[in-house]
Length: 354
Image (cartoon, rainbow, N blue to C red):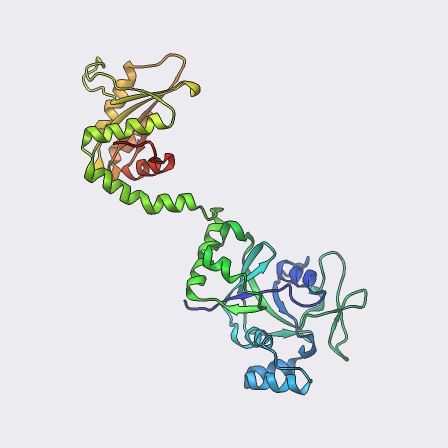
């Protein structure tokens, strides 16, 4: 992990939330600038930042004590914001039931003396003002103080990600931390990257898919090691029956063509569909012979008024290029061993007796 990862809340500070969120997500101007913010408006002046950057935590404590502030733990959030968050660091920003992710754009820390006041709006026409010659506080139009004092320019990586759908367990737990900000562990950082990728692909956390991906391989190994070809055919028949088909096993001489063959024919009456299936117990690759068998059979076997489909189900790792090309031309569905294992998991094994 080259850069550090952080969690930082921008909804802290009295009356600050609508302004802080608009400053982060967008300001209605042409600059496209986005900023993280934090409170502590009493110390929002450049000399404070310069002293803390130059002398560290001791300067922060001294200046706070000089201003008659107690040395509470919350001051560490300001220290992290000014000193420890660096250019290139990634920051998770929780807001209600969503979270956003940004990257710190540079190492400059802005104050109410240096932030562009044209950016300080809530997005609904309400602007903040600042008395730079006096207390340097931000004031809303109703005269109330808005506690925002320090700012970091950021680049948005992803916004508005639903927590419940895209945050894995460690990241979800980290966002329950009620501190203004906190460093994230390398394990949580990995989950942040996963969440961003999944969000951009619109692929939420899916327990069913994760279980299938984790278990399908071992299931396929068991099928290959424990079942001979006839039992594998029985397994396919069980699957088709389980998903609602009436299954028949045509006689081997039922097709008048020499190379035509279907091991199973599955009738789905409610769908008005018939599926002709060629079954192969193979390791490695399955070639185009299986495709030729089922396509030749389908030329002579057709259920009137039903949609007729052709499948090849093999315990193979993959199909040859020739098989794939021919299947594309003839409209044959090719099912590998791993895909079939996931299909088995999808229907459950409660009724399996093979």
